[in-house]
Length: 250
Length: 271
Image (cartoon, rainbow over all chains, first blue to last red):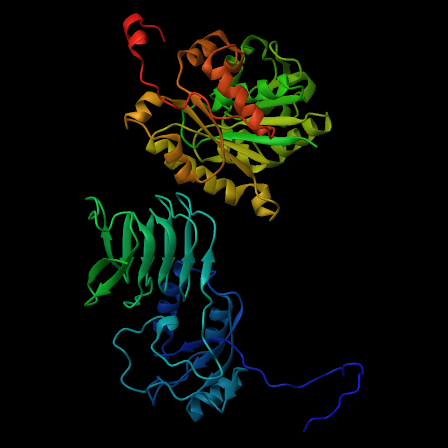
């Protein structure tokens, strides 16, 4: 109901709904040893990847008869890596009870349960798990934009998204993105798109002169000079059949 | 307020020390009180190029460690008024350069009213080179017209942009200048060398000058007189132009174009 608002001092406390952006920690296993090993390897190269984001344990993929994980330990491990887990979702009553005891919240109105099909043979890192982001936790990583030349020895990484480079990528420099790479200048260094395995990632440049290009781990070097139709020209690089690098003029 | 100029390159043997000596001399000749510091501890050369090697008593490391004061260690140049040399130590290694010690010496020089402090960086990207660029306000990147030198200059520019105090504290970035040295217009024209425009296209920083390859440089080093004092030589003129540009003047580039020798020249020789 529209109502004229009189100017008055803001109350000491206000309640409003909010949408919380955060990270889902999808549990495929509740076993301490397996979790510990995977946590260690996942964060080995990028211990500072997270900066205090809120996190929720997604339990929808745990087998129905799974024992409760050691919530307190798991929460502490994630905290030490910059994630702040505060709740569980899609938990069975037993899991929910143990989580409550460990001081975690239980989200009732949880997102649609993660497809409870057989767990993928190889548990993937959370960021690329093929899960539809639930409405409460919109996941969109802003595109990273670089407007200064990348020089030999410099390396930039766009975690979880795309990168746009507006200045030259010089020989010996590295651009890495989990998504696609756009270079609106000479690309003379290395470009690695789909760094976490996204085979649909692509590389675009207005001046192809790269030392190496890679998409989802499939790479190509240019020891032999590039085709004259492509060298120093606008080009896109994509992956065909998940295993073959295709370079096309733009 | 003193301006700290670091002369650096990444690669060795491209002319950092020659350039440091000439730039420092050039600024002093313009009337600015200038100090030039040799950061190449353990491989000191600047004193030779400046011709003051026999007058070194105390050095940079002595001052950092408090064994001598700055006044005792600074050597007054005999070619230019207003110019003082702070030599490196030959018997220590670069670990003797502490960040705090270097900062104190630079502050003390600023306090003594120096207008410009030129830091002659060692080659490489290790501790000594990083110490020389940490406090830079401006950087002169010395590059030869060949790919390895350009690559190393690119690398050192990246380091300036990440490790200098100005970068770390988020202040206005270090002002970068490109100085191409040992340039042979004929060889560049014939495609044996990169041209200065090739270099600039890759490094993308403003061009301060192009110093031609010349025997005068070797001659100057052997005599212990900075090349900028070799009056009338292209090298000295090119350095004088570079000083002018550094101070904001406009000078057209000289000694960069190759002219085919005409018939008369070919018949009668001459340079």
